[in-house]
Image (cartoon, rainbow over all chains, first blue to last red; front, top):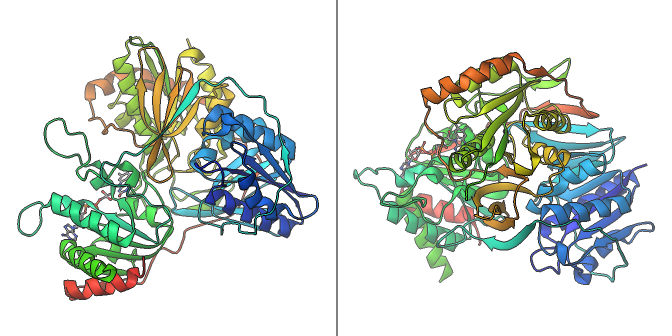
Length: 350
Length: 270
Ligand SMILES: Cc1cc2nc3c(=O)[nH]c(=O)nc-3n(C[C@H](O)[C@H](O)[C@H](O)COP(=O)(O)OP(=O)(O)OC[C@H]3O[C@@H](n4cnc5c(N)ncnc54)[C@H](O)[C@@H]3O)c2cc1C
């Protein structure tokens, strides 16, 4: 008989669970139902009744528990303290299956925690199912090979990719939280905060409907024999502002440095390697994606695995997108089209 | 003041990303068709870690760099022909299976054992580097487990920058959600850093570095220990390629106005 623990953590406000945590709660509720298993939710963060109340509905069933480790040490993500906190939650819950969101916070510590518990961890889980045993689906080779796996060994830790489950939503209820004690380790790391590398704008929006990818073509010589980097930057930023899209980039564009003395910044100052999509970049989840001035080579397109509808604008009718990688490819000049799109979006706004 | 560091980079080898991959199931579980003949490269994010480590060694006299790599000896040798020209290091090869399907926990155990046995190993001066995810398993698990096994609880993942300070402490930038970095300051070594892209371009091949490295690499490969990796109860129910092909509509004759209208409609409401 399995017992399930869902590890969750609070967001930056400290008073609510992250969306990814609530998604993991949904996965836990579903799996517990399928397996007729007992469910425990564990919360890591500074003490927060509000956060606990948002998950209380998930542990309404008899035997279900809500555990929390709390205190200033958990106000910020840090390996030593988070690992100790998660370890304490796991020991208190004695679960055979531990689900957790694949957030940067838990990605940093989950393997270490699994090891401490004598368990095993699989990450980037995109779906879970159970008949006689629990099966989990994940991708290998940077989203090029899909596998369904199972493990006999317990405890089995599974980190779920964000966006693979709906966020748990129930009327907040007053939660009966069991506080779990943690022996805090000595900390040698101080978290100083968050820093955004973008100079002009925050361009990465994981929750956006649309992913807008800019390729190296934006900085290449155009049919008039000139390069138009400044104009490219303006068009892209205007599009992002008007459409609410998240900005992705090809590796070739992200690798380009601006010319000039002492310049270490990217050719487009609002873009960094964090925007890069693909083999050595990100694999974001968006309903739609629009690629511009990008050739659609395989190491780039593997990063589009979880992008639903795909369209591309390229001057090259032999680009990768035309070979079954996009739904629609417009063979034309992206400068002209995006300028027009921006006009239309602007008009729609006003 | 420069610090004499011990830098260990864990890096596997992976199929060149431009290769077509086809999963097959053999007697030992899943693998890739013709895996042993597919051209291989050093795992890209781990390669970023290697370049960052080499730079730290160059800036901190008395420091030492080991590259610990688990894979089939013959493939390691091929990859080292190129990698050996990019940075000065001592290779610690572990002869073992290739690919993304073996279990990460077993890989980590083998790596940790090899690191703990390094001649002159001083854990207190250790910076353990690697990629934050591999291009094969893509799990982001191995390095963390190696760190746990070595008792290191200052760990950072998705690292883009490390800045050493005079007093031995260092600042680390780690990627977090929404395109931001978490900034942390660690009091000093030992620490584990799983690297994302970092800030360094791939170094040019330097044949002289290659020649110097090869003198150590070849004998190391000859005496590489062979390991078998336990599956730890990991079972593959299915392994398959996704349906890749879409029915692509290629539009060559639409005007910019027509395309813009179609796109705005497709994008829909904000
Ligand atoms: C180990 C490894 C890892 C890699 N990882 C990644 C990765 O993570 N992500 C990634 O993106 N790549 C990756 N690559 C690189 C990848 O193979 C390609 O080189 C890269 O994606 C090309 O970028 P691009 O399409 O923007 O540039 P280019 O190949 O230069 O293509 C530019 C395109 O823009 C078009 N264009 C130019 N002007 C216009 C215009 N006005 N309007 C419309 N179209 C125009 C051109 O026709 C062309 O198709 C990797 C490669 C290797 C070897």
